Length: 197
Image 1 (cartoon, one colour):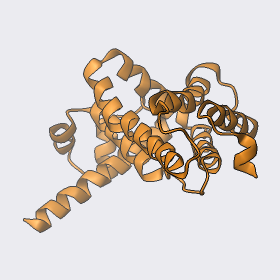
Image 2 (tube, helix red, strand yellow):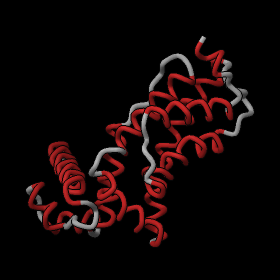
Image 3 (cartoon, rainbow, N blue to C red):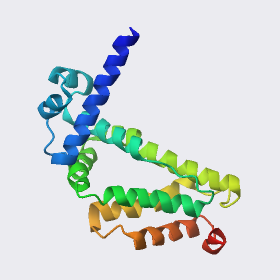
């Protein structure tokens, strides 16, 4: 039984890795179950049985890769943590393949309520909870007031990044990362002078 479960989990991860790689190469719109099956050396029926088709497979593959790549730094200050985290995200979202990989997928989750809920549960909630942990550490250090609205602060942190990625196309460069870090610090009630002293 244990060996069977191990093989099954190995097969699942192979499929997710293959789907993520193909999305990076061809974009979400170019992703097919047939290509994933061939890349992962798995049967198409296995994919349809576990994911029902391309949409859920692509969503889980994206969430899986995001979870394995994202690191929530603990630099000892909120300024350092936010700056490092924003730098990670800006670097990742600025990669040339990301628009093709995510554009179609994010559009689809907006018009399919069930898929959208899965996206929010498997990706958005995980990202927000990780960021809230960063803010909670800052509260424990006395940098941020304990009554702070962490949901609003999370929106302020993530919103500009996704706006630039999906809407404006403005660069997510060092100037942007520095500026957004300071904006979120001010909103959180942290003095930039105090954090850099």
